[in-house]
Picture 1: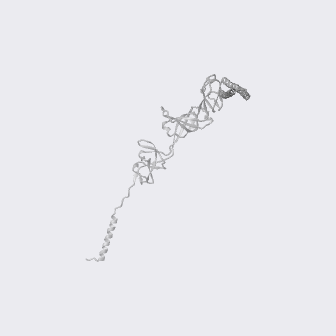
Picture 2: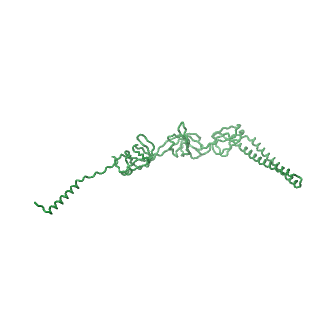
Length: 355
C-alpha cells in the first residue's frame, strides 16, 4: 500500500516527539549532597564564683626603733610597754648635767674670745694712730691684724661649738616621731645607753595590714580585694604588695592586704589571728571533652554550631586531663560546641547536628 508524502512526514514527526518525550521521562534524578553530621555538647554559660579562706595575722606596716643620738645615763622613763603616745611626746630623759656644763663652757669661751677681739681691735687702732706719727712700725700693725683674724676665726668656731653643745643637750630627751603605741621597751632608769641604741619600738598609728602566707596554687590569681574578719567583725581589705621570693620550706609567698585606717583598728593588738575570705569570679569557665579542643598553630579554639554552620571560637585553656579540658571563653547563651571531628571543619561549613 502506498503512503502519501504528507502522511509519511506526519508519522515521522510523531515518532521523533515520542522519542524525545521518552528520553525526558527516563533521565535519572540527581541525589542531593548530604551534610556532615556532628555531635555537639550544649554549654550553659553563667557567672559563677568560688569562695576560699586563708588565715593570717594583723601587722603594722611601720614599726620604728627609737634611740638617742647621744650616750648617757637614763634619768627618767615616761612611758611603758603598750602606752599610747602622741607625736612630739617625751619618752625618756637622760641625766643632763654633763651636757649643761658643755653648753656653759662654750658660752664662756665665746665671752673670753669676744673680750680678746675687743682688746685686739683697740690695740690695732692705737698702733694705726701711732703709725701716722711715725711712732709705730708696719710690722707691729700686721701682727695685730693677723691676731685679730685668728681671734675672729676662733670665735666662729666657739659659736659652732655652742650650737653643737646645745643640740646635744636637746638630744638628751627622746621624743616620739609619730603618734602610736609603744610596742617594745628595752631600757630602764639608771641604765647607761649608747648613741643609736634601740630603746623603744613605736608602732605607728594607721597603715595596718593583714599578713598572709599564700600557697603556690593560689599565688597566681589572687583577687585584688577580700573580706577580713577580726574578732567577729568584717573589714574590707585590698591587696597592697607581695614578696617576690617564696619561703622555700613551705613553698608559700608572704602577701599583705591593707586595712582602711580607723581608730578601732589602731587599738587592736598586733599578731592576732585574721580570717580572710576571697571570692573569685569564675565567669565563662566550662569543662568540655578533650576531643572538642582544636589547637591550630595560631590559637587554641573550639568549633560552635550556629545556624547550621561551623564557627570557630578562641578559648583560654586553664587545665587539661586525659579526657577533659577546662577553659574560659566568651560563649553565647546555650552554645553548641562540636565535640568530635573538629579537624575536619572549616569556617562557615554547613553542618547537621546528630540526633
